[in-house]
Image (tube, rainbow, N blue to C red; front, side):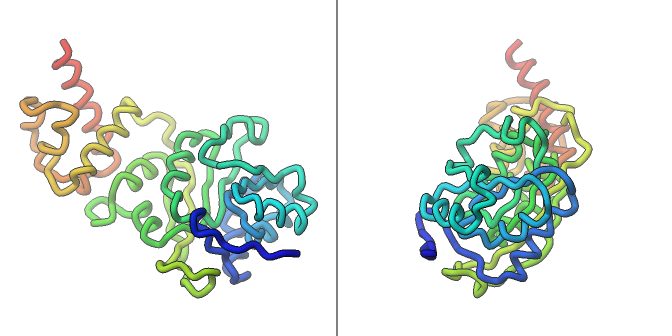
Length: 264
C-alpha cells in the first residue's frame, strides 16, 4: 500500500504518534452514541481509533491520494468516505438531519474557517473536538482581558463551552510543523437565543476587533458613524478585548437601537 506524501498546499501534517491519536479519538466519548464526522483523515491515523467506538463514522477528505489510501486500508468505510471540500459542504442532511460530533486533525491553514462553518451548523453539532495550531486553540479558549482574546473567542464562546485539553509537540508529525499543536473540545452551551440580532452581533464583534487597540468609541464608527451620541456611554471607553460575551450582546442591542434612531 503506497504511503501518501503530505501536501504543503493542503496544510497536511500527518500525525505519527498512535498514543496521541488515541487520546484525540477519545475526546468524542463525552458525547456518546451520536454519529461522528472526521475532517481531513489523511491516512486514517485518527480514524482507526474512531471506528471501534461502534458509531456511524463518516470522513471527509479533499486529497484524492488520501481517499484512495483510505478505501484500500479501511474497506469498512467505503460508503462513508466523502471526497469533498468540507468548507463547501451542506451538512444539514449528512446523517439524515441527526446531530453529530465533529472531529479531526484539522489542516492548520483552514482551522478558523472550519470553526466558522461549525457555528453555521451549531444546532447540529453539540460537540466539536480535535487538534489545531496551539496559538489558535489558545485564542478560542481565551478569556476577556487576555491579549489572545478576539473574534474567534467571542463568536465561539457565545455558543460553546471551550476546553483546552492538551498540547502536542512538533516531533510527532510528518513533516513536523513549525508550531506546537493543541487539542481542544467545544461543547454546546445552553444558549438557544443570544438575545440580540445575531448578524449584527457578528458585525459588531468583527468590526471592533479589526481595530482592537482603539476604544470602542473609535472602532465602532464604521457601523454608527462619527457623531453618534450613543458613543458617549462609559462602555465605549473600553477596548473590545475587555468585553465579555454578555457585554458584546448588550453592546449589539445598544447599536441596534442607535441604528434605528439614525434611520428614523
